[in-house]
Length: 286
Image 1: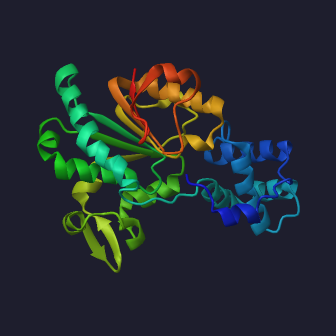
Image 2: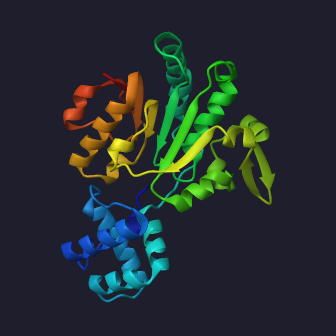
């Protein structure tokens, strides 16, 4: 998920109608109707986005909006989309992907060869419409074809929003999402269709998309590399610690965690990670 714009925040900063009782009511509805758990998310961020829908539906109070959610399944879908706004692009933050390609991928393949059998497991958390895990797939296919052919790699991409995952599986994007894609990659891995671009099946087939909720840490997949960029920022600090411990639990020895530029390892989880590159927020499981 990504934050709403500064202008939108100013427009909807008055969310006093979202009382604790109303928030609890909405949380129950979203949990029961869509399995979307609001526990652990920052109340202010969530309330701000609920207020967007409250005003858009001309509801005069939070209680009225709760009643609308109970009887209107389409509004439940619309609210979930607002709560999980996705804005992304390929090769977002190029220096991080350069570091990933030059240092982290060789490390993962080396660890696979020396310490374990099987293939490296890569997990893209909060993958939205798929640009991040597909960028990982592009880099592996283009620069590590021998390693892929010899040991392979699994790329799992998860998000809480099933609707956006359907978009990701299609792998079709507008020009604005490809601004950082090298021309060579465009020619080799994208097919133009009516002004939009679809990734070739060879790349799409490398990524598996699944719906998952970070609050359910017991379901985290065993991994060698976890990319969780600009996701933790939406959780309260206590929940961030729980999630980070969950990451440490499923990372294999030598496994790597990459966070967003505005995020860092916090609290007791600091004991479980050591920095590789603080600038790019890259950590190794201690």
